[in-house]
Structures are given as C-alpha cells and as structure tokens.
Image 1 (cartoon, rainbow, N blue to C red):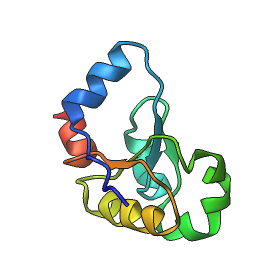
Image 2: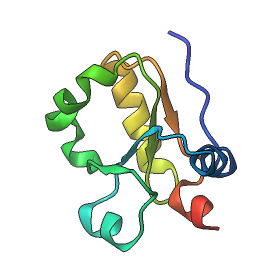
Image 3: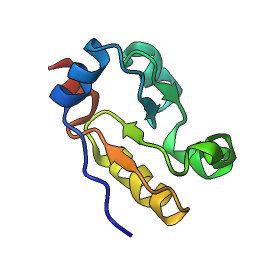
Length: 101
C-alpha cells in the first residue's frame, strides 16, 4: 500500500478558497469541534471512529483529510483508516492550530 502524502494547512486553505470541497473528518471531541472548525468538516471523535467507520465506507477510494488539534490524533486516525482499507487518507499537518495560525 502506498502511504498517502499528508496535507499542509496552506494547501488545504488554497483548495477551500478555490471552492473545492474535500472530505474532511475532524477527529477531535465534539466540544472542540464546536469551538473551532474548518468549513465543511464532519466531526467523528477518534474514540468513535471504529463504530462509525461504516458511515465512511463509500469514501474508501477517495481522498479523505483527517484533522485534529495538532495532528497527533489525526495521525492515529489515518493509520487506523488505512488498516481498514482506506487508500487515500491525508493528515492535516499541525492540525487546526496550523490552519488557524
């Protein structure tokens, strides 16, 4: 399996500014997602990801961007999703801190 290349905050902002609508999964807790979010991001907390993976089944071969606060939880989410057969998962490097920074 080819490891997906992660995405920088700059690249994601550029794509959103162009009107693209990539699939973004925010793996932070619900309260964190309420405080600050990337437009269009869907919130599935990391702890709930295994139970909710079926919601994402149709995305297995599409680009999915995972993000959290700093990039650590989303790195775990990326690894888990790849083990489950997702082929194009990209971690937002630096998380929402980098995105807002």
